[in-house]
Length: 329
Ligand code: SF4
Image 1 (cartoon, rainbow, N blue to C red):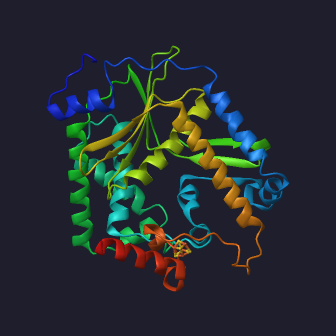
Image 2: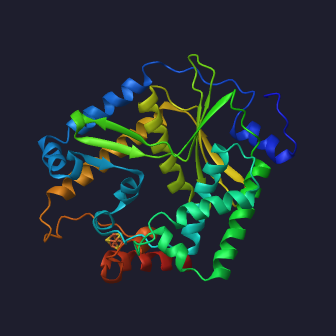
C-alpha cells in the first residue's frame, strides 16, 4: 500500500478495496483496444447503407450513442418519447454533489466544505438563470429555507466524502473530472460520447492497466443500470487511450460505499455489442415512418415511468399487472 496517512478504517478500506493501492495491476494485451475497435467497426458496418443514410440526416452527421441512449435500448417507445428531464430536490442534489466533489478534487480539498458548496452554488445559480428549464432557474426559485437545507445536505455530503476518501497525491496520480471523451467509428457515421465523473490515472507508465474509472452517485442505487453506465465509460476510456482501465466503480456518496468491477476483456466485448445494438435501434427508428406504430418493439417494466407514452401504453399496463401478480406470489 502507498505510504500515505490513512487516518481511519474507512479510508484504509477505500484505499485497498477501491483504489487498489499496493495491488499489482493487470498486464494488458497491447492489441485489446484495436480489437475492440475492429469488432465495433465490423458490427456497425453490418448495419449496411442505412447507417450512412440516417447518420447524414442527423445534426453533426453522425448517429450519437451515449449512456442515456443505451439506457433506452430496452424499448423503442422510450427511445422515441422519453419524458423531458425535470429538476427535483434529489436530481439537483445529485448534480450539485458531482460538481462539488469535482471542484473539491480540482482545488486540492483545502477549502472548508461549506465554502466549496457556496462557490459551486453561486457558479451554478448564475449559469443560465433566464432559461426557465435550467438548473439555475430551479435553484433561484427555491425559498430561502429550502435552499439553505439543500446547501446543508451538500456540505454533509462533501464532509462524508472527505472522511472516506484519502488524499490522492498529485505526484502519484493524475485526476480528471468529467473529461469529455468522444470516439468516432464506422468512418465517422457513429460517435460515442460520455463524461466519466472521475478518472484516476497512475503516473507510472508500463505495460499494465493503470486507470480507475469512478462514477459518483448520490441517488438510489440501481446496480444493474449503474454497472452498464460504467462499462460504457470503461469502453470509452479503452478506445480513447488504447488501454483499458484496471477497474471501474460506482461510488455511492451518501452511503460511503462502492461497487466495483475489475477489467475482463469479455465485459468490454459485451459492452461493444450493446453499443452496436444501440446504433442498430437508432438507425431502425431513424428510418421509420413517424405515423407507423406497427413495427415498434415495446417492452414494459420499471423504466416506463421515464416515458411520455406511459399513461396510454397497453404494454406498460400489462407489465404493471404482471409485476403486481408476481408480488402476490
Ligand atoms: S410506457 Fe413503457 S412499454 Fe410503453 S412505450 Fe414507454 S417504455 Fe415502452
